[in-house]
Length: 337
Image 1 (cartoon, rainbow, N blue to C red):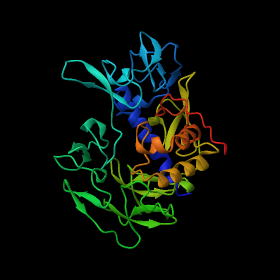
Image 2 (tube, rainbow, N blue to C red):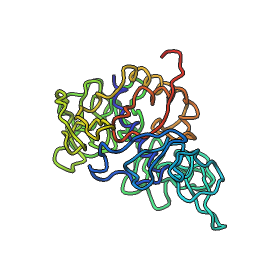
Image 3 (cartoon, rainbow, N blue to C red):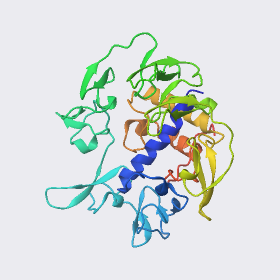
Image 4 (tube, one colour):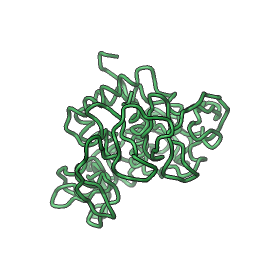
């Protein structure tokens, strides 16, 4: 059940990486997440480029050219913007004045690199290794696995019994326990726990409550980075056109044919096979020796080692009627399903 804590975070990472691919801004207000977005078009069908958050959108691997979805450009092909390139590539300027599609943002800390654009988490490529940015860190993910980012510098920290790095991926991964804050203070160090009591401190930007029970992190006040784990209540199915119409623990589930949706509690969109698929995905990650499971980039370590598991996760743990999903076909071919 603790695996469910990680599910929605993976979905959000997929969404953020999709925005990098397409070169679109990540939505910053509720109107951007309206029921008019995410109408998917297949290759050869009509698409819209006039408004990046509305209209028919191509598959994440394709591009919209003259109003028609066509195959995205591959490595070393000339491009104008990142939206021209296949997923996993960005449009990068070269010394000859042209721009080319290059693999981007797929190597984690400590991995071998040739240039900084290959590194994830805004790492710098230093001596052919993805390393802490030269100007200093702002995230624990920019440090070694036994370090935390403190005042812009990576510092080694030896975990005590039952402690965990709260910003790390699967910090209690040996037994899938939850890593939660010790108190209502922002910290990189948390504690591993089996069951998360209602009212426990949590981070609003990280899913540290018990998703197996449908808990969510309710902010202490508007805009707070701290919150308390709260029970979800029941679905009221109020009609909506944007998330603003719904409660803090709800999404606006859309009907793309009418532009109107209804409010549903976070987590209720997870499919029947989602928990089994995500368990297989996380177990594969733990066997892979990769450092980060939360990557949709096809060239990332976890995607190269767990491709089939990741496709099954995407197939069963996404909801095409939620505005933050992007257009992608993820067939699951594992015999278990």
